[in-house]
Length: 264
Length: 272
Image 1 (cartoon, rainbow over the protein chains, first blue to last red):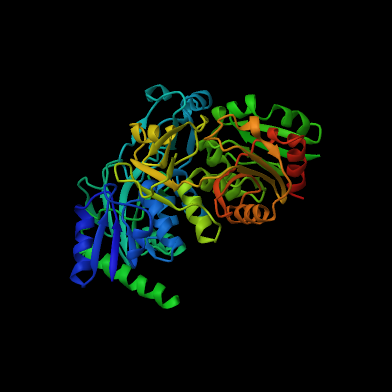
Image 2: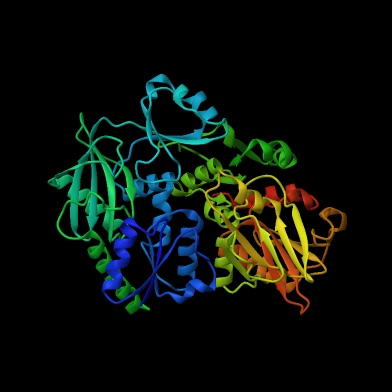
């Protein structure tokens, strides 16, 4: 089968995933921003894997592939929603029983006019990004350096223990991390607690996710779990559990593809 | 009295909807939400509105519409999905083509790749900003190549993180056809194509309904979930109509008593 991987990079996890597919006898091409043309040439593949979620060009490519009957895993809509901070918040809210921190979304001017000292500390997060890249704690609105019409997303800071929780199929790998550090920082593997396990299964079953990750904070005073970030396709750099994540994910994707094909 | 929320920005409020608002306020209770002073949050939405009308394409405007749609059953015209689809030219082209609407061939490729068509128009990718279409026209060995200045600015702008062009095959047409749609009420006009005469209103004239355009317009509006729209068509030498542009913010001021017709349409759509 011919598989296209939509990815910002050709190395890292994308390279491992490509090798995993190739080892199973498939032809794989990686499409980056340098070589991705979204037109009839994309119809030559049987399946796309959406590793990166930038709206242009990867979400566009996924949308085009799906419109032309080619499966995309993870699907285009769920990938787009994970990338958009507000949509990601709604994903959490729409599960029903999961929590995400309160947030504020507006221009710097409107935030200045509406936020009070008691609302801080807040976490400033990019509006269209997942992961911990570009986030920082803000103790006063004056700490933000932004143009007047710039739109910002600020989230209530939850004081607690921070975890990144990977899941691949039914396997869960939980790591404790330094607050606000990204996926590439040093982390400690811990046993997955029952409340985290229940949360992950609720999340993945609601959105039919084969794999992914959640950043979770367990609030110190209440013990409640808050989802502070979600991702459809982490790099799995801190996967400290059994086996090779790239190979496991390739297997899950191929199995899902067969299921989808049999339904057609 | 029907209770209507208007979600807009300062530009549209000052330049596009004053007559409309004056009239609407005689028939409905109106609350205006202005993008520049809006702050959205987890507990924002407690509303008694019967309908929201969205006049604008800014990120806060769309986000507010999205929250209303997600958390209430109040009708939103146009829906955030419809606005996003019309703003993202490539997405609506893909969807319309899939559903069988005749649109010119298109391609979305890195800006430094060779053009995919001999005669083409490069259009801006995300139609969100307020500035207008400014064509740069080149003749190339008897072929016509048009670049929307906005598309070039998008690629040159360091803030944008994409380096792509949206190409649409150029359709030579004597007239450009414009259809305004408020629900199932359609209004038909034609004008000399803007590439020939940039002053579109100078040659615009009202025309009788054209059955083919009516069917294409209503079908396209349904596919994209547009309750209010303006749609542009060109007619090829062989007599085929092609849908070339879809807009979710029709300027009802171009229609005789358009603001009244549109206000009455909105009231008819309010939650019963």
